[in-house]
Length: 429
Image (cartoon, rainbow, N blue to C red):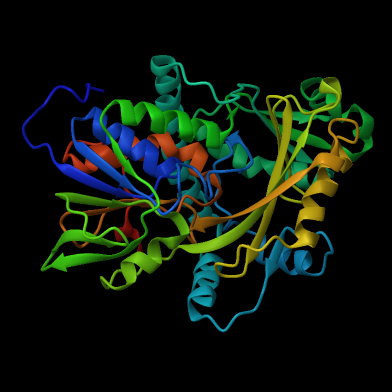
């Protein structure tokens, strides 16, 4: 990527809405292409919403849609479980039910394969981009390269990994199916609960890292490169003139630019509604718990994805971070004690000697989910309005690739990878 100081024809003033990991990576790459970039966020700093305390897994190989064959049947079983990974709090909200129905329509083998390949395409590109950034900028964010172990507690779950294995083969994603002893060799902290491990799918190329630390560090470097961050400013709308956006309406007054990028996660549909743009992004509430490590040898080495409870447990420096659950409850950000306890119980179940749950801190955030799985990265019906949103649980995984792609699209450059199936146009009809 060229340096921002090299001015070229066709450069613009680009306004980015949102300073989470998606907005900050987008702003960084736009500045690298020479644009004058302003980032606007209602928070007092970067990475303070969904990017703040996520699972910490950077899972190129684990990039998969939630909409998968068998999920409707599993969901019915989960609803009857006290430790269900899924909670639907019934609301008189047509948008939620439309989103659920659209997700169910994507739970076929054919659609799952198509959507997974789209997600893998972006995730693998993002892997390359993150490695380049880390090498070039020397970023430190409690990063690790220990891979992801998808843990199965019974043989049935292990047998079902075959379909994913075939898709991973097609994309040349390194992976291995493991038996119990092989899982324990990779994650020795599981030795105390060996009887709960049937086997696993190991993805050695996956990484870990603190998304919040990364976002803060990259925002600071972007500011050094000329990106202007305007915090404590709430965007209230987008002013239009014909097929163009002419400014942001905000609590600080109008903010003008030549192009506008919306990267506000779950809140993107609200911002676009007045423009007549409907996007199928819905907030899916997730929880995390962070505990200090008390015995490093009994803590996770990298990331373990417990398939039974859909909880990811990750080592971040001297901490254990566990995150999971899917709660459909609109924009409610209250911490529900039962959900916190469920996440904590999975940590205690698999790593009983690893960390001190008495010192646990809990957090909740809204994941911007599309019903099919891939995010929405690209153009809108307005000539100078662009989207980078809908990454669900994989915003951290896909951030660098999405940021670079949208910078190329806004700059009217040929994208580095095939972007088919990643834009808003896939929902037409």
